[in-house]
Length: 189
Image 1 (cartoon, rainbow, N blue to C red):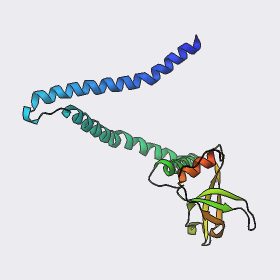
Image 2 (cartoon, rainbow, N blue to C red):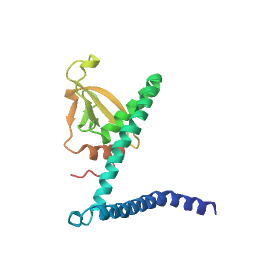
Image 3 (cartoon, helix red, strand yellow):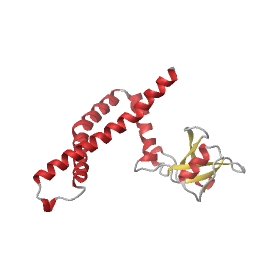
Image 4 (cartoon, one colour):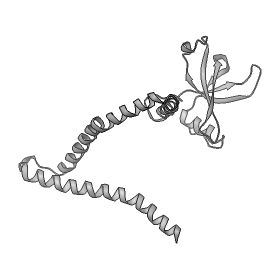
């Protein structure tokens, strides 16, 4: 009986937000069509005008919300992070990592093979994450390579001589799937 109650509540958690969203959209559409129908001349009315009005209204609300609500919250959160250096380090690292996957800055876009030792035939798969190491006072000819672990979202960062690196001619997402799956996924060409 407990499981049935739990499944029922989970069902509500999934259905209620969707149902309420559709209800609000339908009511808004009907309301705006009524206003538009009563105040616009008939030659300016056309099917879908209420839908366009809803999209414009939601966009304006989103803009105002991001300026009035999100900006002060973001500023407060940044001030809080300035007072807690450890939290700031963790937050900025996770944020940068997420930006490499979903943001504009793509960090795992150069898949490579690296040779582990001079005369070794063993290689690992990784991604070049930074080619300019001047800020670290590391001589030219070396790059940062991130080597993800299989079955985890962790990995190791190495500084590697370019001569030990061989580019892989395949998409980064396919290589990442291959590494994370431990090599059991197939690479799509």
